[in-house]
Image (cartoon, rainbow, N blue to C red; front, side, top):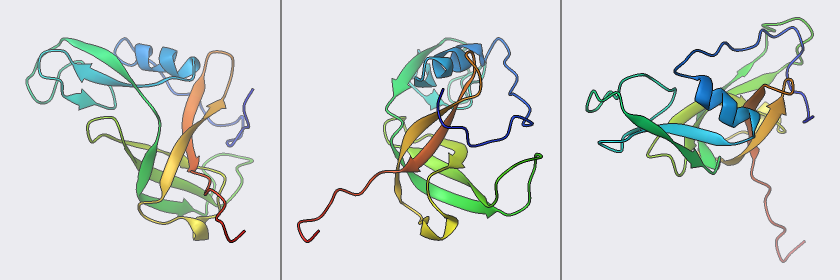
Length: 147
């Protein structure tokens, strides 16, 4: 099990026939985006029809989970019992996903340390054996020669 960031009182997300492959990949700790087979347009969240060419044909492309903070907010009021405050909700620009952004939590850093364009990497929160949620944390800064 990974480190838990949210309390057990948080309701689990629901999967349907369109999103199930995404959740199955997440359970294996793989971040995937949907890619339109005819035109190559990527999309997240998954959808049954490509917004660019209207095709219903698609496949899944695994991405690295590296990106940058596009925008964020620090939440100071709990949305579930037992939630530690404050927590950060961030929009992450994924670096190898065709310009896609994902909304998730930024963990492992206090709100005052977060900056726009901060490099981040994917970490997984295992909610159960079948459910993992993508979270992001700041990319560790390599030690400088002055240290």
